[in-house]
Length: 106
Image (cartoon, rainbow, N blue to C red; front, side, top):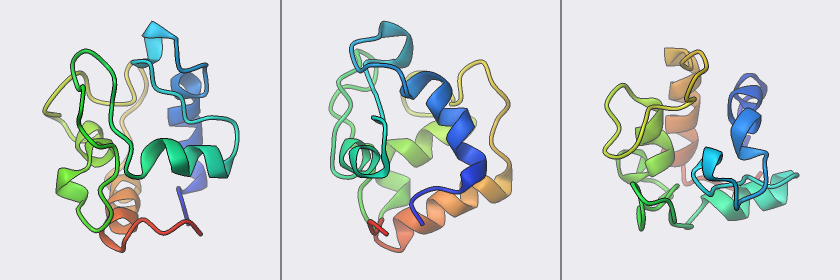
């Protein structure tokens, strides 16, 4: 599973917008599963604050910006979702588990 259904609304609120939007850190997940996977796995941030950090490093959640940004003290920028309710520990664990298991595209 790419993401639990319960987290999509948290992310899509901002990152479903076009990639040139400054309000979403110039990061768009696209409009479907394939574009989301391509945008995240092995791709690097182009935002000013997190430039060059890889969103998802398969099998390495602690090195993955996506996972780091869900935690209370991310290494750059703000905790996500910005302006929304934080994901629950269970939701964060699903993301961590997916990355740790290799971030498969299934």
